[in-house]
Each structure stands twice: as structure tokens, then as C-alpha cells.
Length: 103
Image (cartoon, rainbow, N blue to C red; front, top):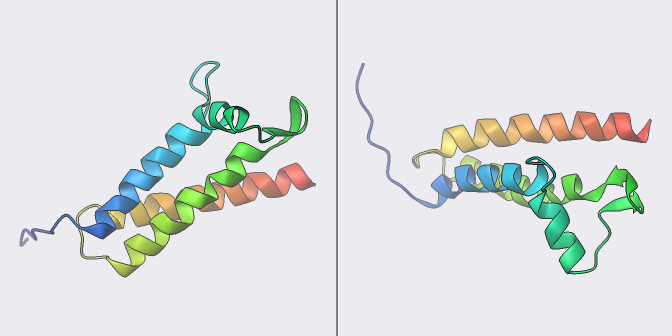
């Protein structure tokens, strides 16, 4: 098997954006970075005060969609394929979970 050296480039940013999405949207103990940022800029975190639809998850798409687009456009960059696969996975998971919230 031939080893392919891929350059670090704009497509490599896709993996960073996926990791940032995970840090942004998931609770680590009682701490959620996205919730803190939204509270700081006076945007609601939940649709009904402290419960309901968790808006932080929807803001995650602001990171995942660019990650996917960068990975597709610059597919020959290092980590672009990993970023693409992970962003697709998270978009599907978040979309499915969002569907069940609405029902």
C-alpha cells in the first residue's frame, strides 16, 4: 500500500470545526460552553426558560455545515475525510434527535 502525504490546508479546518462543535454543544459535567456563551450574549438557551428545545444544539449546525462544505471542497487536505465523515455523522444524529424533540 502506497503512503500518501496529504498537505495541511483549508480542508483540515473541517476536523477542527467538528471538535469545536463537540466542545460547544455537549455537557461536560454541569458545564456546557454553548450555554454559557448564549447566556453571556443574552440569547435563550431553552425554548421555555430552563427546559424545552435546547437551542445550543441548533447553533452547532453553524459549525458542522461549514465543516462539511470545506471537507468536500478540499478533500485532498489532511483530516478532510475524517472531518467530512464526522460532520455527516453529527448532522444526522442531531437531525434525528431534533426530529424526536418536535414529535
